[in-house]
Image (cartoon, rainbow, N blue to C red; front, top):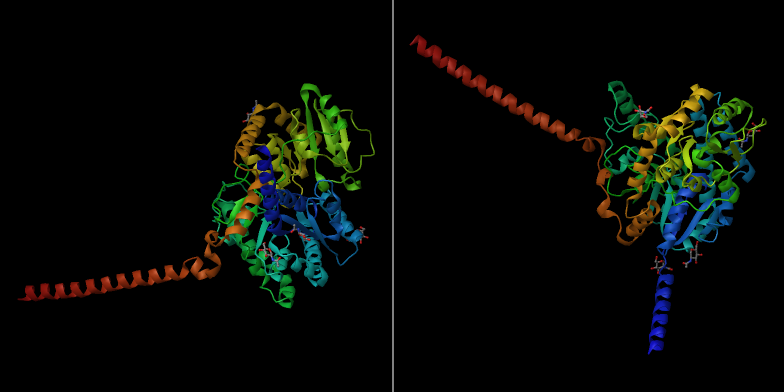
Length: 527
Ligand SMILES: *[C@@H]1O[C@H](CO)[C@@H](O)[C@H](O)[C@H]1NC(C)=O
Ligand SMILES: *[C@@H]1O[C@H](CO)[C@@H](O)[C@H](O)[C@H]1NC(C)=O
Ligand SMILES: *[C@@H]1O[C@H](CO)[C@@H](O)[C@H](O)[C@H]1NC(C)=O
Ligand SMILES: *[C@@H]1O[C@H](CO)[C@@H](O)[C@H](O)[C@H]1NC(C)=O
């Protein structure tokens, strides 16, 4: 009796497998050239797409081909690699040079523009190399993809989508989700939403609102278009729409923020919040790290992680000394991410490591605080695990992340220019001893986790939904309006003219009636 049933079940499973195998949708993911958080955030989405039965191919630059050999993702995804127009070593040298420039503590923010312009030129050259690689484009065409998922930072991914005649979806890894999606119809109001790079919160005084509005207009109308304008040469050559249109042609926007840690605003329906893509439950730690943490007893540990934004060289030696001096005074032990150990003796409560399983350490019950630069992914990892922070922003969006941290009460901000051993110790002491910060962190953590889906699952769900059902019902037709129509200037002008004529006619009538009445009155007097 049981046997036929098993056979039936077996063949049913085989049939289902064949159906799901042959109808597997292929998705192409372009995480820019594959560097750092651009890769890890999209890999988290890719992993969930695999769970939904998709076949996922990553397209990245040869300098980051090592991801194809990673134990976690190597066999999970397919890989397509384009060659940079410069040697691989030169790509790494460029990033190392930029890290050095950024982390040089003697400098102020004036390095931002040179860094951006170097990156801008490198990206344009990479894009040209990618589109000119006919063999690669041919392989991509043959793979029969259903959609392209690309990184907002590199519009080239959308150009590949156009070239293959596929719908494309965009993901945005920085905190300014309300700002960048205002071109999609999200409601961005400079009165209560801070523009990028202002470091304002959503409560601004008059002066801040003036600056905020000007910055928004400047970025929106001048700087933003200028960033993609150089790609026009390529779009003309390959017969695809103007680079300015490519972002607004994106069907779905996945933004790396969450209202638990972000300022609230109203999103267009095709904008989905997936903040905290890299967050996940802590996994077991390597034995040496676990032993070090266990040895800290009730005092626990603090993590210090600045990624590539603080590297050890002559210009930074004094910063490294200040850190060590402040850490030495703490009752906690400190796990410190630093590629090269400093050339002076390190206090016994510090463990220096060239690489950290940061998410797993944050999830350890003995972790008391995170001291970091304000990276968006680390911010959400701290929220997820309910760990208070001290933030010292160095570059780019980090000042804005720091504002969000202070606004939500997750921790304290230190100014890089005024940091010394005293105030660093004070800040770390305050967040680890004043229970307000831990309480806030736990509250944010439970709000963040109390959802039907994790961020990466939500991202994969919406990609699947958009592929199956399209996004026409989600798109606000803002792009079809010109500025006069969008700001209702035509309508307001029309109404003003009508009102003006109405009052003009009323006035004229009154004059007429008055003069008639006066005439009658004068006449009757005379009579
Ligand atoms: C391409 O993939 C779709 C499913 O995504 C499938 O319906 C179609 O038959 C495939 N075409 C070819 C030529 O493989
Ligand atoms: C998955 O995509 C790759 C192209 O990157 C292709 O070679 C492979 O055949 C696809 N697998 C399935 C099951 O569709
Ligand atoms: C990096 O800096 C070194 C020396 O400072 C210079 O020789 C080299 O050309 C730079 N490399 C790149 C790719 O910018
Ligand atoms: C703890 O921190 C909160 C928020 O910054 C502050 O209002 C409070 O005074 C602090 N408590 C103590 C005991 O310092």
